[in-house]
Image: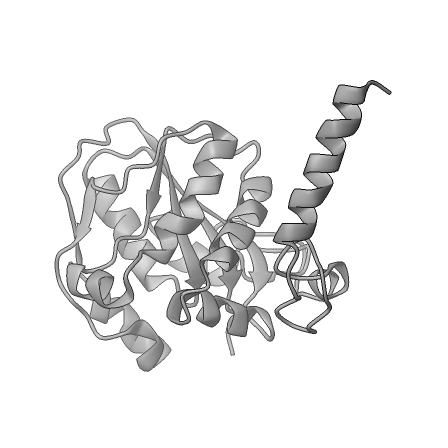
Length: 235
């Protein structure tokens, strides 16, 4: 081994030790990422058989009855985790506790899942300007950046706007969420013939993402896939 190679490895080892942190879940000391390997292995995964359209469990991975009865405007959904403990707490810590390191962590997971997805543009779910000012960042955009880098696909964070401020979806019953976001988005880009990848943190009913998918398809998008950190399963 050359002296140069030894020096590079020593420098990398020093940086790794400097960047080491405590696991956010169990407190294990000196882990290289926000979660230790044991806690990461215990994160709640979705079952193997899912509806390809909306990612809720189905017996054999077939399209669910709900999507067959009334197809959503999006064409496919990919989710990294089930929205259950402790993923729910981690997502909330990312969004409301400003732990941006979790955004990078979840973004890397999404980038791995997105490998092979055909997309011309990545569109993070927009926040209303007042909500963006209040939070200080758009969590969907933070998630989109690592995915865009991995896929080599551009992020369009300005083509769609959330021009109507709505009540927080989490505060509403499931049945009222679609009505709450109806007409919430405005698109000022021609997406004719484009395959879009829409990104957000959590998909519960999917109402917000479905409304954005409806909007971009009205502006020419030919295919819309969803990529989310966590999928909430129906009660």
